[in-house]
Image (cartoon, rainbow, N blue to C red; front, top):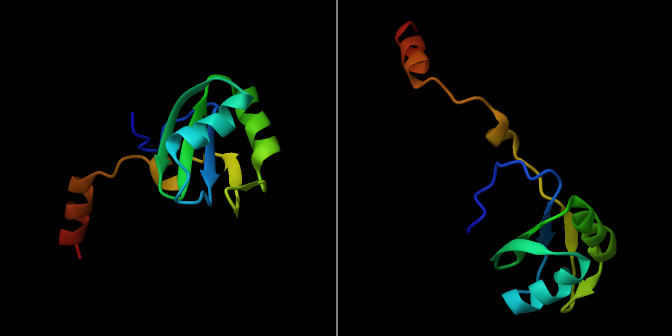
Length: 103
């Protein structure tokens, strides 16, 4: 499953940034599974989203891994955030078109 963003994860999703491109999916999983059961990892070059089964496990990973050097790079580890764009209500395109006609 690929992370698409926007969904609420109740504090169980962790963002990991500044990952060296040479780090494999398995190396990343091995390093982060010590904090608890991982449900999924969406790993791109340089960053990943890790979903834990329990938010306390996510908090442990953040506390223990943020700022730690991993494969020669200092990691950024924090709770994943829902972007403001994903929280806005859907736009009514008909309303916008009607508004433009009035101008």
